[in-house]
Image (cartoon, rainbow, N blue to C red; front, side, top):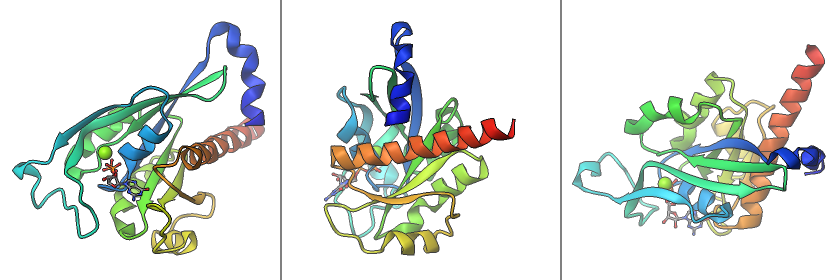
Length: 199
Ligand SMILES: Nc1nc2c(ncn2[C@@H]2O[C@H](COP(=O)(O)OP(=O)(O)O)[C@@H](O)[C@H]2O)c(=O)[nH]1
Ligand SMILES: [Mg+2]
């Protein structure tokens, strides 16, 4: 946070908009995550799951989810006077994958959410950001306290490189979500500093 507040001199020209993307498998808590931290009522485009999604939008054994994000979630958070975060939650289903390239335009980084009961569901998202060299952190949603696999197990199961932080989070908790976002901003900042050094 301290480094972020160094940018307070920007106040006169208005806050710097920073875009981040929240991705991960279906039902891992992306919409909840964006909603937990947003200063505005998040815009979501949830729709009741219809027969069209049957067998495709697999809720598995673990969810009672009856709505799904059709296009995306959108939330806004004023970090301080100098920075305002715009958060975009991706639709989880593979059939909306074509939207990701647009969603990620101009994004500083991404949070990849993982449900520790269904780790592999977030692999496509992980693979996507890794292959595009987008800075990201992996956040394991505790779903109200229970972790079925530790962050280390998640790291190993998904072969996450050592430079990518794996943290645990609570998609329903504002503080936990804020910490997760700050860990992403830290990665972004470290990367920018490292880049500046080599230039
Ligand atoms: N108990 C619990 N339920 C959660 C948590 N995060 C999300 N959920 C629930 O899990 C379901 C899927 O969450 P949602 O945010 O819609 O997932 P998305 O498909 O990734 O956007 C919803 O019914 C949420 O209320 C959590 O941390 N704890
Ligand atoms: Mg959603």
